[in-house]
Image (cartoon, rainbow, N blue to C red; front, top):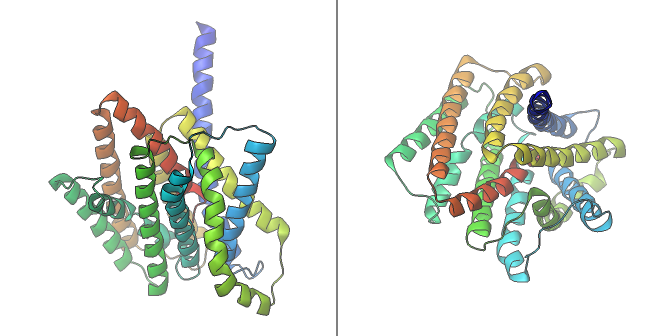
Length: 338
């Protein structure tokens, strides 16, 4: 009995450690990206190039782990048709999300970017409804209204609003929402179940390709002309943190559930918003900022609770499929956090 209690306590402690690791890595990756992109010491204001580096690094590491060392298994069942119809649009939207999200850091503060991200459930729901994956209801419309109102209040309270940065960030939100919709279609309509490592293995190479093409035309000429020093250690560490973040998501979901990672994500968002005020000179929080963000987060919490109840009352077969979808969907957004 004593051994069982000790084992239970140990497992609980390990789970909390994984959650804390995820929050630390996710928050740290956001700050790390901001520092690399905006720091005069690093002098690397190339969000497209940085995101491309992340995707190439993830592709290489996934290939080594899965095919060379065979430490991780890639799920079978991927066909050319599924890859073209599902993985290709997912990879394209993922590339768009990371590119635009990282670019936004050049124009707006980290905290304001996080506040704008709170609109994500609204974008996912509206696009999902258009795709026939969500059903309009009075309750959902109320929740969406609360989130939207909160984001508007937070934006009104922002002292230095740069609309170029807002456009980039909202473009990233739309890209992420589309990616999640494609993820759900991949699982529900194609019947393919993938763990997070498999998603990285399939999606990262195509995302890298999608980033490489615009990088050649948009950023490579600037990098050729500008005087900047390549810092391999810093950029390699930044890419490694990105990959470690994805692994931490895998660990949290393996020991808890997709809902836990959503709740942890909300905690992480607050950590990022509050810490950014202390770490970056361009971040100045106001009472209106925090009030609006609090309203938006309350709406996000209501949305997560609604989705949880909806999953609870589903037939077992559907619930299993949804859990698998949630596991896959959660991997990349917190991801390579932008």
